[in-house]
Image (cartoon, rainbow, N blue to C red; front, side, top):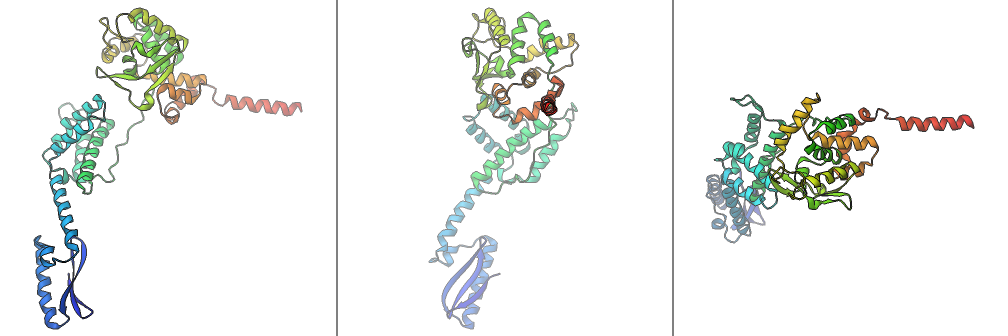
Length: 392
């Protein structure tokens, strides 16, 4: 509620507009008649403010606040235009802008999330009209089982969908300068990734019984810890027999060669003698017919799904070993290196980790099962110390 006040014998209007307190001086002297006159003016101003028709410059053309409110009006109109942009239109524009930043596989993944989940849910809504309740309702729906198949999306998959939505709504809020609805929305908790490395005895059994043409492939997997896309995308120009190094500069993702997953994944792996021999054996098989180290008969890169289905799982079943996905070969390399006493920093570099934190978090609990003598070094030190005291 505004007021008519006096100062130095003159009257001024005191009211609020656009959340700001405004004081506008008049030339009228402070008399009862003039106060009554300004009360009517103030009532008209407040009526126009409520109706959204108030023009500051019309009532106070010489006020310095006219330009301030003019700029604010421009900003509000810009926000309204942006906020009214349909989600489908903004998301499509945002996705194309991201294309230059992302690998093709990442672009295709997010495009699929938009097509299958986000655009069906929000496509016809104004981007600025999406609320926190709308976001939580979508997540609740994603957590429900499919009405036809009865299958549920994994927490990891749901989090990936929600991450794409978060990036879009936050970008729109920043671009059109309004408050983002994404506040205090946390990712779903995910179960710890299942790590089931093979023992050294199991590795030896697998390599002795696997198909001869795939023995080098699995030898390299078990003793380098390479990711599936990295070994399937390995080309001969990145195998340095002289320096005994494998240079990881690319990965095969959805049938395409792309840059490595992260900057730390761009690395060189040291060849052990077993790996060196396996790669030399592979060179004799495919070195002259393909740029890919491991390839099909016609020189094309391997399809990891076909290899897993036709070679890997049948082999485990034949050997009566628990069914484990091929990625466990990477976990096996890490645990065998740790059990052998290799430096954690060196192991992290071989695996393409930025530091050792993931190494200890994921793999250290398997060391007792592999060497069976955790604490033995400390026990030996104590025994030696007490023996010296006894001799003294």
